[in-house]
Length: 429
Ligand code: IMP
Ligand code: MG
Image 1 (tube, rainbow, N blue to C red):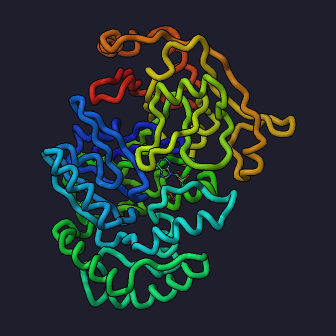
Image 2: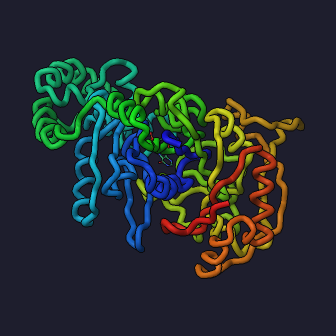
Image 3: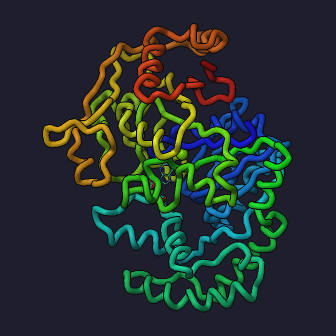
C-alpha cells in the first residue's frame, strides 16, 4: 500500500499522532497537507513525550523524509522553535522538505485572530490564536505571502507593502494596534528565511516522484473531519480542508494516487473549542473520562469537553473521506466503567436524524439516542499486552462487543485498537 492517508473522524485529538508515528515505520515519506501550528500531536517513544504542532510526525524516524505540503500555513518562528526543541531533545531526525507554495503566517495574522474572535461573540470558534484563520483568509483573498516570496526579498517586500497598510487599518478598526512596523517584520522574516531555505522545494514533484518509485508515502491529517472548513461545524471549526480531498489539494497529487484512507476514532468524543456537541457529558462520568484520558489541549492547554462516542459524527467522516478502515484509540480510558453508551442517531423535533445536520442551530437541538452496552475491565499494562499478542480473539467481551457494534453500524472494519500512548500499545485485529 504505497499511499496511505490518516485522518481524524471527530474534532481532532483522536490520537492521530501516535498512529501516524506507528504507520510511519513502513513509510519513506510522511506528509502534512493542511493546518498549521494549531495542531497538537503527542507521541510517546520509550517513555519520552514529544509534542509536535507543525513538523510532520515522521521527523522522529531518521530514515523518513518529512514533508510540509502547500496546504499548510507556516509560522516561521514557531516552526524553527519546534525544530530547535527536537534537536535539543537529541532526536535523530530524518530529512525535512517544505513547500515553496505554502502560505506564511505573519505577525498581524496572530493579532487579527485574537481581535476577530473577540468581535465574533458567540460565533467565535475558540481558536488557538495562532493566526491560522486570518492566514487562510489572506490566501483566499490573494493578499497572502508564500514561501517562494519569503525566499525572495524583493517579492516579499513588494507583497508586504500591499498588505501591510490594509492590515494595519483593519487591526485599528477592530480596536487593536499593529505591533511591528513593516521594516521590523521584513527584517525578522528575512532572518528566518535563511534558516528555512535549505528545506524549501516543490513538494508536488518530490511526492509524485516518490510514488512513481513505489515508495510508501503517508499523508498525515491534522485536526479532524468535523473541523473541516466545508464539512465541519461551520463557523466553529478550523480554516483548512481536513478531509481526504484536502490531502490532494494540499500536496499536489491526483486522486488515483491514494491507496488507503484510515480514520482515527477516539473511543469517546472530545472537543476543544466552542459550538454544539450533541453527546457532551456534563456530569461526573464526563469528568472521569476527561481526567483519565488526560484531555487537555496539546497546543493551548485548555481542558477538552468530552462525551460519548457519536456514530452520527463518525458516519459522516466515513462518507466524506471514503474511509477504508478505522483505528479505535484510548480504549483503556473507558475501561473500568459499568456501562458505556454509543449514540447511533439523533432525534430532532420528534424526527429521527441519521446524518449530521448542516445547521448548527439544528445540531444544538439534536437529542442523541444511545445504545447502552456493558463495559470492560480496567486492566494492568501487562494484561493489555497479553491481549495484544492474541489479537481480536483476546479482546475482553465488552470491548469486543463495542468494536463489533461500531463495525456493524458503519460497515467499515476496525484494524487497530490502541490501549495507551506508547508506540507498542496496540491490538491488531
Ligand atoms: P483555529 O484552527 O486555531 O483557527 O481554531 C478553530 C477551531 O478549531 C477552534 O475551535 C480550535 O479549538 C479547533 N482546533 C484547531 N486545531 C485543533 C486541533 O489540532 N485539535 C483540536 N481542535 C483544534
Ligand atoms: Mg491534537
